[in-house]
Amino acid sequence: MRDKLKDEKYFRNYLTKLQKEMSIVKYPGYLSTLFFKTIMAKYSIGENVASLMDDYNNMIDIFIKSFDKEMTSYDSILSALSLSVIFNIENIKKLEIIIKESEKYNDYIIQFLFNSKNYNDYNVKWEDMLPIKDIIEDCKNNNKKEAEKKMKSYLDNWYNNNEDAYWYETHKSKAKIYFGYWCLEAASLTYLLDLDDSEYLDNQYYPKDLVKYARENKTI
Image (cartoon, rainbow, N blue to C red; front, side, top):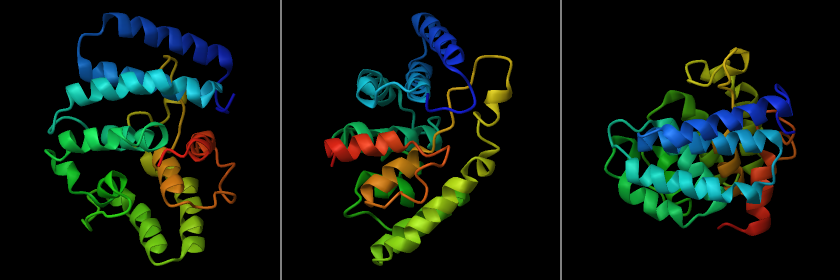
């Protein structure tokens, strides 16, 4: 188990619920979300990261087909890009083709995830992502130690800073809607920026095994 808030029985039941939903859902955008939740729940329960690849591929295929430049959320885009950094960097190019039609494309963090070597210096559209821009800027200025300190602080405050997110406090719900709390942008940026994560390795929201997988498989 990687998650500390629920037990294996809970997540097994939750995954069964997701499978039932997948068999009847008609809307592709929601189906992509169900695959995302499946990935997160399987990661929470402790499954091998490599075994999540099929669910990831299904999620991305449907995400691309169902993308709506107006309706697809920033969080969904950030999750798709962050997971692609970990599992298959080649999908970043496919995602850029569709996402560039959205106003969310002109965002500093999104631009960096599209091309961490040569990105456009846009502003950050969502204020709670400003610390991430600072982390990237520190690395650009050869100050990784400061970037690592800021990433630790970002993770320490990540959950409380997301009280408006749809998943916030879902672990308290009587319904089975909790899939785990994982800060995917911390994983993708730690990998892309080659940060030393030893100071925040044990943070409960940091998906360290995703970073380990990416580093072992050299996804970039």
